[in-house]
Length: 522
Image (cartoon, rainbow, N blue to C red):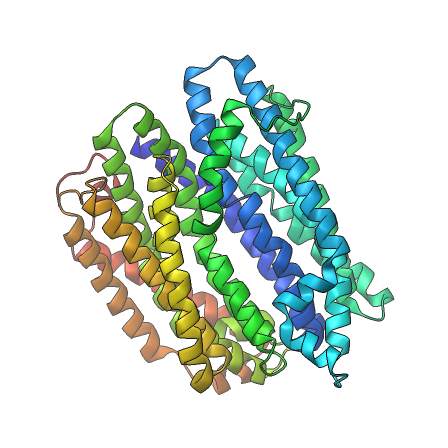
């Protein structure tokens, strides 16, 4: 089983790597075009709202509820019943999302006032920045329909993942990045406000992603006509699981929306600095954390259906070991190399050294919570595979309330950086509660040697981090390097760090068998 999970995880990671690299290219183009000024703030705001809802109705709560039910049908029902389930789910979910999309487009001003309240007050009082509210509302009208396309894309991706076809869904986001890049390069020069070109790129990206997956769904014989069927047994089960999960799996997204709400009251550039640092955080999170979570959910669902508690526990333990193996060094590398990475990727055009300083501070705060973000992605599926969505919701509520309190505590002395600090701390709380809940109920017991494996990973990572910190020059030195020299030096740091970490791990006793599910020894 571990070989299959490793192979699937590798496929997802490679496809995700391609997507994330193009995502970085997209952000480089965006930074060059708009920097971290008001235009960038407004576009990132208009892009964040439909992406938040995507987490609810597409990749997040829906997938967590849909995959266990589809796995159950795939194992116990004939193909005809699976087709009926897909038709009912696509028709019912599609009807709801269509209505929400129409409301979002028509009510974009209300949504902007709700989540960008600082801009609304400025507009209401006739202040000099009143244009921000009007422009954000206009951009949201263009980006909001992306939700409709990406919902069906996520549905087909969840179906393909359940069937073991991980590569297609993992590669699909590439087309969003390509669409935004093309619009930024070819369309924005002909527009007075380049942020509109990027918004059009988001919309076209959703359309292309949707169209890309249709042939693969057809090949599997599951391209069916959508049908509204609110009372279909599978739909009833999915919506019962999904309703509480709507909140549970989206705690981090809700926290980030709260950050956006507060940031609209802060200095211009706050939303952009948080965005750029968050994008760098999402690179290892998507490459490792989400990839591991994607491949273990079907496996956990199957183990639960077969009442194989031992396999269930071993799969969770494998996920935790893999998260530590990849997440701890990634977290330290992200923090130590924050300024060099931001300099190499974004310091051009409208994005200057002052923006690097500001974005680096929020990246340090976000980066400290990377391991926790990854653990949440791996631990939450253990509940959803058992069709328990209520428990993560309880923990999610606690985490969200703590984030709100921490926002108030840290935003006063630290400004926008305080928002990132609060987000990282609340993620750590959420991860701790998820782990304790599994442990207390006997759902997860650490396997033999796990503590020693994790301890060795931490030691190797700390030694690697200390060496990198010692040799890493200050930002002023990085800023005076040519682009080619800075890229070369950063790549050398990353490669030497990764190589050194691997050698240190081997030297202190880490071996491949520690990352196999069947491993029971150290």
